Image: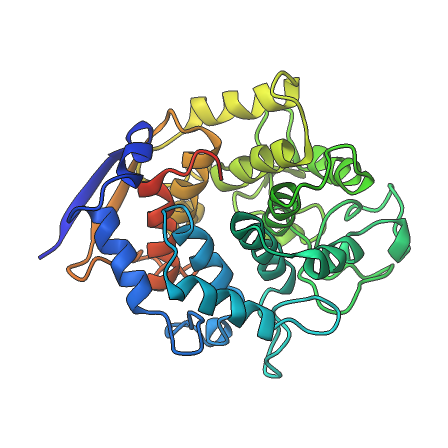
Length: 337
């Protein structure tokens, strides 16, 4: 039997303390039941996620929003360490294809910080991956201050794939590990964040890979949309932009004005782009719960086994491991994370 889960984000913190037969408890049990013997979580829907290198820190980070000292945590952390290469990067141990190395490594740093374990090798790797002078980039380059996919360091003139989401996860990891907001890494990142913020206060996805800006453009200006605006706001906070800063206030105002309870906002102008609004539903729910916890969120159907899945597969949210980990973040509402 399926049911709909209605959640006011402001009630999420209380949900973390409940150990009953709630949607949160069922989702958590389902996620733990999917942990493999090697300690990792391995995608069964998409080949790119089968290695578990990006999925494992993503799922573990969600589960660490609740108290858990069981052996599964240690096994998962050991999985991350085993899959870290000599340069300190996750996501490169499968010869078939890279598995989002900077994203995975940023999440691993955040997990290590939660567990109070050493992350120095991962942090050093991420510092070396930033598009800065150390890799030949200047402030005039559109990628300056950001992070890309990872792997071999990118040098001018080819930045490869660069986006705001990747940058957010790295910044949140560094901030959780205690990297100071006065650190040059943070200041340089803000250059990129500023470039991604529109005059309306919202954010777009990439200054480099322009066709990845999912809400499209108007006269060459890329439209703001909900997930990227959450990413931008969370990135600015992680990089040390003050709560009183006008950039923060403008991003919050955009989210308040455009927020939708059931899907990601910013796509209604062009009907052809509406699929992204549904496809990003779980990502948006988890991100807005962190960025603006006072706003209400409506999660879609919870499945009989306690897992969640998006019927729209545009951004892989039909994979229940992804969707359920996002749902746990919403249901738990980890204000401090």
